[in-house]
Length: 275
Image 1: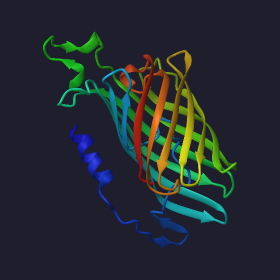
Image 2: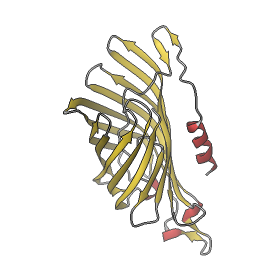
Image 3: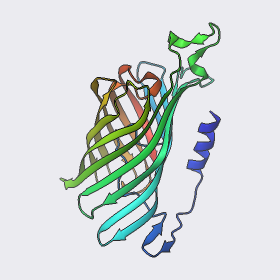
């Protein structure tokens, strides 16, 4: 919990978007050239998600920021950082918030924009998962559900291509990517996985959106996991803003301690977009 608090302060503390140019490089360029994949729960976000029909709530604390930019004609390259911590509360009804499990990752990315409809992102990340005290039953002196902690981590690279076009007043984007884990535990996880999706963002005063994300993961047999979001955003898409959405998840659990557990659930959420 201390780590979540400190990380929240670092992310939420205002800072000046200073720029410094040396040769062809620009530091702290505004915005991003590879926008967040809206329905991908492995893209950093800042906000909350509350499930229907359960007491579970998911706390998201993270950001993805471009640090330095290089240009050559219409071609743009950016190097940035990615930090994301997300936690699951066991009982939202208690006055004291009980954290059951905490996951997170950190690393960096290289993004490339062609000046046209295509853009690419390469991420190099380390991810891990840990139970928190909310998962432990102190009365019975055992882990809840008799599901003991496991050593879970992935050191992986992920390359994603995105194609975006304007259609009938909306930005329509298609993307697809591959991920490979050079190191991982448990070894039942396949090193290779893939991700695919589509998202539609409406322009104008009523900025509604729909996003669908599909991932294929081996545990060890490959299965599909899908996430969908339908919501509205306040603020221009190219600037800071906030999103409110209805979400639907079907497939593998988001948390590594439950890597082989399948779930289906609905809920409401909001996300503050910082870039």
